[in-house]
Image 1 (cartoon, rainbow, N blue to C red):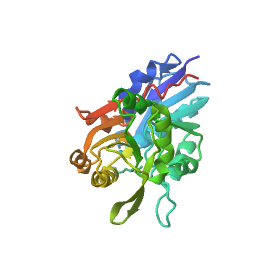
Image 2 (image 1 turned 120 degrees about the vertical axis):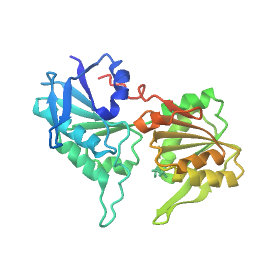
Image 3 (image 1 turned 90 degrees about the vertical axis):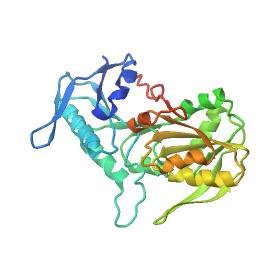
Image 4 (image 1 turned 30 degrees about the horizontal axis):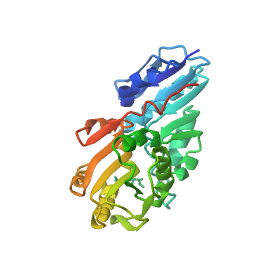
Length: 294
Ligand code: R5P
């Protein structure tokens, strides 16, 4: 019996890749709005006792998350045995700091997913292990290292220094180092964020003339711009950026081109990344990673 894949509007560009998996067939459903704007779902496939995958997004616009929750709830109501949410980029995972008076988005996300019938989550490079624990729902966070490693080999970058923008990203950096057989240890910056914005303190480790920066997210690009300024001052000549989730918000990130960055490699985990594909921004496919073979 094949499992069913239900893809939400936010992620239809990935459907074809996922359906290349012979264990999956496309689930039929309709999602629309009533005249007052409320979302509603109608399932067309027989989902009783079936394992169902919902491919969607928890990132803005909010409709993405509400659609995912309502679809999961409807699948369970109709008798699905198990619902797994496939959320390549897990929005709200950056809200993992329990600050007085502020929302703890990742904890909330886990609770609403669970309450809506989601049994487990599969994502890529979740922002932090702390967030993974707070999500309180069985979550597999796949590493993007195997997507980027071939680029390091093919482009002859294995003598570059691997740098991560903060200490929390060192484990991810080591995964990429292992996978790509890049030499030397992973260097990292100490990153601080306050009301004034992001500040990058001293580098732990040493860098040569060529650097690869590896991070989970490029949003505004402030983190990477701050890092590249430091690296440029340290005499680095060429920087390659490898970043799992490309959000490319605003235009700050474009400063990277004047700071020694020659190329950005990211994945198609977000639709925003696809819009930024260019000669210098390469979009790599996540399909090899999200191979649902059970
Ligand atoms: C933060 O800790 C993340 O790892 C990213 O470095 C950060 O979220 C990127 O955001 P931005 O591009 O706005 O600096």
